[in-house]
Image: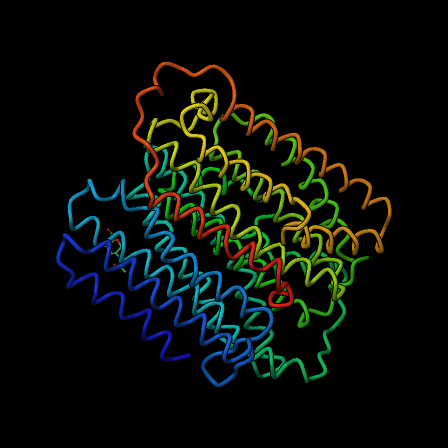
Length: 453
Ligand SMILES: *[C@@H]1O[C@H](CO)[C@@H](O)[C@H](O)[C@H]1NC(C)=O
């Protein structure tokens, strides 16, 4: 594992020393190489590895692989826009993305809660730099501020909980504390304590009501920022909850019922909000919030099925929403607009891209053989066994999801062709490859879903 980390660190000197002409090729190539290397290592270790520095198990393994996989894809996606910038800016961009990659990888693999906290918070810095320096519009500063403020707000109670946990149990290793008998003084408001301790993770996911930073950050971020944000950073929150929930005694459902209600409401409300978006990126961000609230609901039920549902959902969502952002970016690079109504009728000039839209949007909706469907089904079944009423309410989400899926397809693909998009340059092989590499792992996982259960 240390070798893999050193391999990721070796991207830094490559970028610093690379001749300007070959920098992107080298970064992408090395990214792919290290990813394949990490993947084969993970499979050889069979998702089971623990020493004093790293811990890989069924929760962190799939997320680590997802993080590794997305790095070369972000490199592929950012090339065309970034190439126009001065060389030093390109360098710092790649360096910052690599730094972000390293922080997330370390956060996923560290066995120690304090180190996890540190890397979790450290990932904020490169994200904020990428959004505020390379974002497209002036409001990027506001987006960066929202991001920092929300993250810091959640960090304080988490910090307090971790120190208290350490002073009571004398250890911060979850593997060790699993075997300890954890006793906590019972409190008057147990659910409230659960929510405040987990606030950092709930904000990162984000749960409805605390999600305001996400659409802003997504709309302003450059493509690599959006991909990493949707693909891995949101998953840090889910990973944190899954990791710490066995350590918190007061996580029984009757006590956290208000949170559950917010999550269920959030699933519906954000799916409905998607129908009212005019901005393509903010629509995708809203649909992420909807999916992530399903994860919150699944984690709250805390049965084995709902945990695997949450895992599958996170992996599937990481791949599809990142692919959706790439697609949105390909239209954005051509028309410089994210407004959906201005992108109408592209099916006529880009039929193959139309096919990508169809496939990816259907995956996002959870079409049956896909792993998105598997995740959703597992979560729905555990919801049903908890409360049929909750199941019925969340089932409405399926209708709304279908509705906004159709809305996206119809507004971006159909309709009369506006004059300004008749003279666009065609899709490049790089972009097709990028989308294919997003979908391929999802399709392969259909064959062997045990990998992420
Ligand atoms: C990230 O970008 C900032 C500003 O462009 C730069 O000062 C910093 O060195 C970069 N970080 C890394 C790790 O390269």
